Image (cartoon, rainbow, N blue to C red; front, side, top):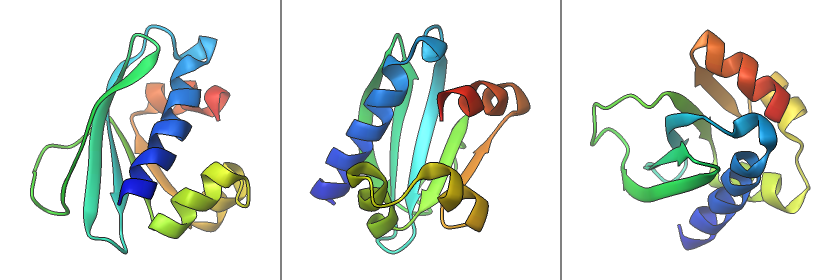
Length: 109
């Protein structure tokens, strides 16, 4: 789980630092299907804040931006073995968000 947290901080930190992300204030979640864990946090003011883990199904709170993938795919995304676009298109990585957020995220990813 520690490796996944580091990987997620890297991906989300890079995303938050992009100019198109400035002004975003959204809750995030990343469900790691093989570990039965959800990482929750907030994308705000150009950084990712308040990352914490909880058991999958523990919270009914629905984040504004939701990612779903395996821990191996998360690590592969960070070390460059997997590209987000093809992983998303093939269903290995799922991204759910409102229409406005999806349009903004499209330019970030």
